[in-house]
Image 1 (cartoon, rainbow, N blue to C red):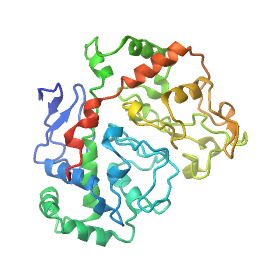
Image 2 (cartoon, rainbow, N blue to C red):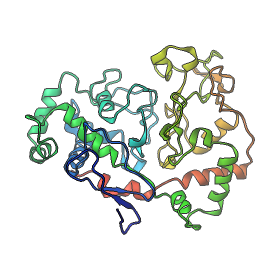
Image 3 (cartoon, helix red, strand yellow):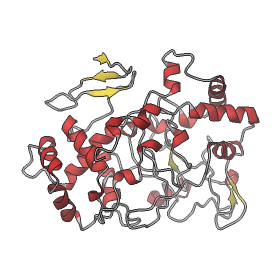
Image 4 (cartoon, rainbow, N blue to C red):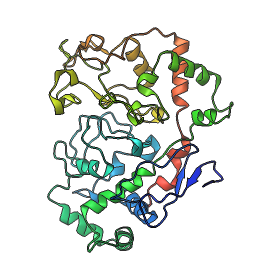
Length: 365
């Protein structure tokens, strides 16, 4: 164990692999969980990085994972609703991948998706909506990958014990290995917490007080500012109806955007979506599960009134009165100064080194 020159902690655990893998992590961060069935290796991470940015992994060679997960936006995409490789619109915003490996389930409302390896199948094989669009074209895609000289080296290095390393399961294992190194923990708030009293501006320090006094930590607590990342959080508590909608006063959310309700069909689960991390929140706009909230100021205003008010259109309704709204969401008063200070604090959760780290960038350029 040693500290690298950039202040990051370098750990060297076995991770279930006979060969050591060197983790480069922010100070105070332990390695994320790694499945025994998919041990880490440098070759596998490099393979996953290349696959993440490779348009050959889509049916029409037009899209890559990185098309909806861009590094400069903390691996979100700065669009309210993304389009898939065939131009089909999604109903949900692209989630950022900041510290994704520390989560226990994946997606806005996917309690049964509990590994990065299985999550990758959703954009690959999904048909409603089409994302990468490779269902029934898996053999074609793997043939493309086999023809790439770099992959002819990296696949055997990563999965040498298998007779044929070029499988979709191995593609997803490699992508998951790359996603596990996407760890962010060097924002101004981190440096402040490590003792650098000058890391936060006066406004951000005041905003930190506002954040704590308003008990935002009930949902956005812990190291990653989301209880969805915190061990010990009761199962289900990481999914919240924030009062973003209340269509017609019935508590309804838009079609195909009902959160956990789409799986459980329980009325109380209507609109319950996972609590995202606030790390890098200033660059992972727009906000809400459907990207329908444009700014941090708008987010604060919606919470301040205890739910969003939509006065016209097919989604009209007062979210404050949503009968399924989470008990943790209630109206509060905030001054213009307090609002500005709270925004300053949220901006201090941006880790600029994460957004520019070459280890996470496009290797094909």
